[in-house]
Length: 242
Length: 180
Image (cartoon, rainbow over all chains, first blue to last red; front, side, top):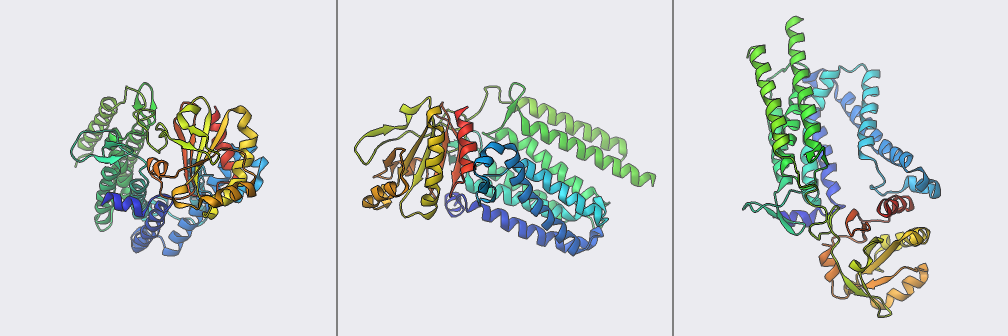
């Protein structure tokens, strides 16, 4: 089953899964916009501008950090190669474009983030499916009976662990209280996602290691988890005070 | 739930997280790099020994110490054709720094008679290797053509590019990375 899935969506076809997740996530998010005081049009525009910012920003930032390579072949700037891309810079660019759009349209910050939460949660599912298809984000070797044969070793099915976690998170967030406090839906998503990553990163075989073996993604996830918990507490306090 | 109770639970979660980070640290170093041959970033490049059209034998592991681009291609594959001039150009720019291109033709699913006209048409000067049995395609778990593997001087795959054509800038950035 996994082999068939991996064959069907072998790179570069695994990107189809991300596009599908993008579409499904936006569709789900659209269904709940009314709850969060934001129109469907505003949500769609926000996502489309952010995607545009992601694509253009990722390419431009990659080019800026590799200027000599592009000076010799400037037309490469318009290449269809998805590898000519700075994913982290792209995320920052998408966030900035989304932020500017939201500010100019006077969208409520927490309400907008809440409205986008189903989109983010579905995108996470798509991302883990894409990882499973491509064999990336693979697990460490294991002798456990549920290990999968990947890259010439029996490994933790880390992609399936993370996929399961993201599906559970999506399910939990799709059935919230009728009208949660603004911001709580997004912060719950951030805390659950960071918590899942913090726990599951331990089974990954491709972790970036820092400070004598600590896994960088776990450290980052812990910081996000702490920030989400502190922010949720602050929102609750503000509500009680106000 | 009372705010104090919540704060205690949150603190406990964060402390548990810190403990888990400490317990699950990988103190042996990188958990994959170089240990097992596999066609994936961070792994030792699967070795192969193939013949050129003129009958010479080339083995990948003999090139340890040099930066290698293994490019799997076929004459009937349009993106393979499209990226060959860029590969040739970048090969000529960096070959004196220890950069080698091994263009492995998928001979088992290609027409051998088309190979020589193809290399002549594009003026390719790097070694063309013939995968007559499909052994290299299997070792590299080939799914799409072209597939390119950028291998550093220690024989570790640093980048995999599936599909094409690769742009010149992409080739330059990846080659410079594996030459370091």
